[in-house]
Length: 239
Ligand code: FPP
Image: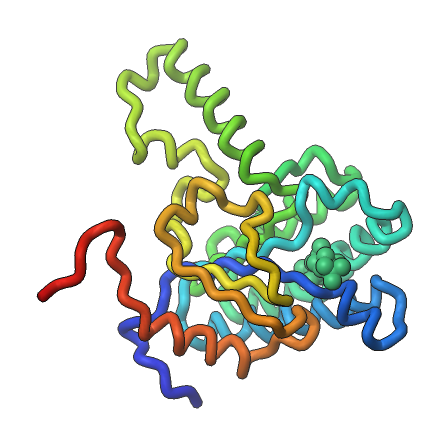
């Protein structure tokens, strides 16, 4: 049960899941344990999003810049991702959740790429929630890739006129609405190269709660705040 006005809920929520390392540090645990518990938060938030009927959720799980982390942490994160995909597939299928990877697929080990393609294929027809996982993702790279592909199509003659709507189609999120609401955990006030084009008019919410502690009750209070925000998209308020 929740007391949110369904009419006012966002259609697309994006989350920068931050603070796993700090969570582990407070408990004197290795950093990877923060990611392990972080996966439980992922499960909780995905399930809550599905229950609330919010149709799009985008989670920032691994940035293009994260590859330079210690080798052991990166390897373990890749392992966790593989386990996550294996373990979550039944839930994704049961709850009608479509899985999409957004980011540079080619950066991942072949086996993991195959796993991601397989989960995307098996869940492709699911319609209740689209879960985008941003992996090896960079907002600037995404924009550059879009420009290069658009340029190719202009050269071929299949695109004659460029405007915002045409450009948007070349982004990883080309077919879905821009995020209405962006949540960042652990208190940092940055976008960190996440969905740079798409967040032009997104409402931003930052909480000090570290990602492994961020669960449904925190999500509901964030969404409650969203329902009270007035979105103006550059216009003035009505008198
Ligand atoms: C940020 O915390 C978190 C990440 C870079 C990884 C996010 C990964 C997960 C939540 C688990 C894996 C998810 C899936 C779906 C397999 P940080 O390590 O930057 O924390 P810190 O800023 O406190 O050091």
